[in-house]
Image 1: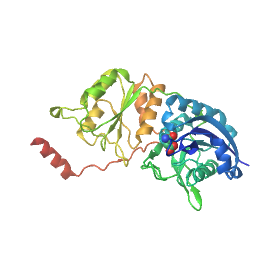
Image 2: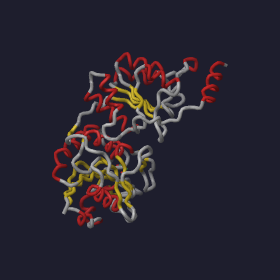
Image 3: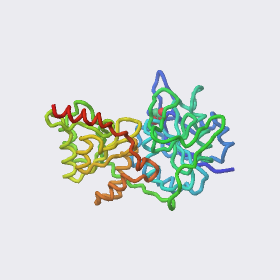
Image 4: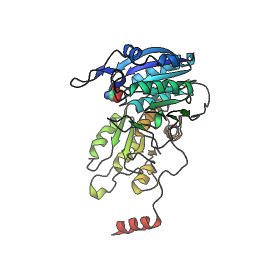
Length: 353
Ligand code: ASP
């Protein structure tokens, strides 16, 4: 029998209770043996409890410990399944994908919208599909959910109360688990299996919104090592000084203080192109880095890792942020169509008025 490691970390999948009381982490392995005994016909499954928390409690220190643990254990198995809450599943999958480079077997994260102990739970099928993906899927860190296998660092949680909770807006699925299960080859190993478990979590994720007082993020600058700015569309934010809320000083002062700024998009599809509009161009001129089509979760974790491994070299950090390490971004494709010449002319004449 093939061997699969099942590492439980918590989440709704293993919770009990529910209305009128709150859902709480519960004894998962007992429920697993009772509700999904057929799982043990697919593989010789070794159960390990890593932690048992709502995934809102997941923190960078836990990612590092989890990666180090998996790094030690993976070579003894044909595949691994990590059970996890859905709320921060995309963050943890991103972290593991950056920390476990060239894994020797598939590492599949899964969770569910309803606890395994409930009759209409999606947990049983997600678990079965995750084990199958751990045996037959690509050797990389993935998320298996609602009959699909996604590249972990490309996913977003998009739904709270429906079973198809995840999407991978900028990258095709790596597997479809319908009547038949089919998988894509996934990432090619580029070197030995290595662990990069260090992170510097002193970063801030700033979402741009109409009304944002630029003085607020400026006050944070002395306290952070890096900023992720979740900007509008292609990487836009206000820069008109006359309208009073320009964020340009944030980019200028960040550069002066040596605080790197990575710009991601609030839009789910396509990505950041800082050369397209004036504000993006201003950010570029101040040394900001566009995150292309990375998700905000992946960008945040990647910046944490970049800061830990390239603390003294802005050039090396920029290169690291712009180069895919686990298929997390698309390189060399203009992800946003350029405006037509007519739109450029209109914008120029509007500014002249
Ligand atoms: N709050 C839960 C968690 O992330 C949600 C879930 O698992 O679906 O742990």
